[in-house]
Image (cartoon, rainbow, N blue to C red; front, top):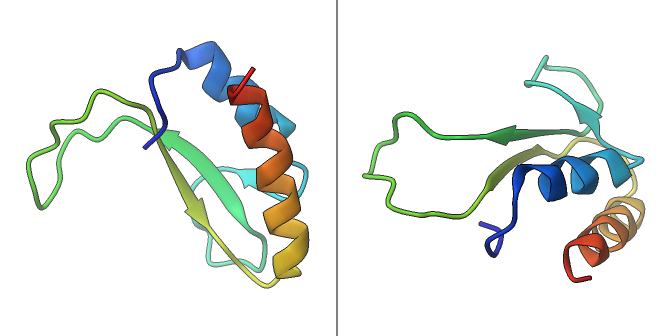
Length: 77
């Protein structure tokens, strides 16, 4: 969960990612990301923050970590 931020900030974060495609899991070999607003869950969802789902695939771990760190820095400005 992200600290409170608006939809534009989440869009900017996702747009800044270079090693993640945007979409739902297609069973492929690419890492993907998708902003979601849970409508149902095994547990009650009581959080106010944004939720972003990541599916990590076979890219180099350090490349993905660096990509995430760069994009997350946008949320801290």
